Length: 126
Image (cartoon, rainbow, N blue to C red):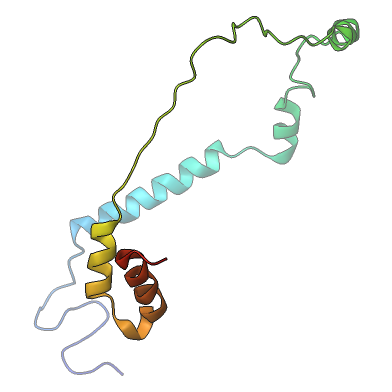
């Protein structure tokens, strides 16, 4: 059934039983330990339901407090003086060098319309 020089217990060329490498032993022991830990820490559905806190999280709920909060008028704090200066930021970008580079390097087969539009802009006739 087995080919010459090979059996389930012996490696080819060795005369004794096959040696299991230490890493294989450690991997199987670790796997077994993790599986056992997972089984021990799992809760049954009945015990999980029993340990669950009551709905609402046990917070003190007072309908009177909620009603008074809802009846209170909502006021905005608009006492800020309107004379404060408004900050403006302006950024300008000189697009001309980028347009020139695009016109010179873009493949006309794909960007013919854009190249023509940029050329018109760069020459001054819009």
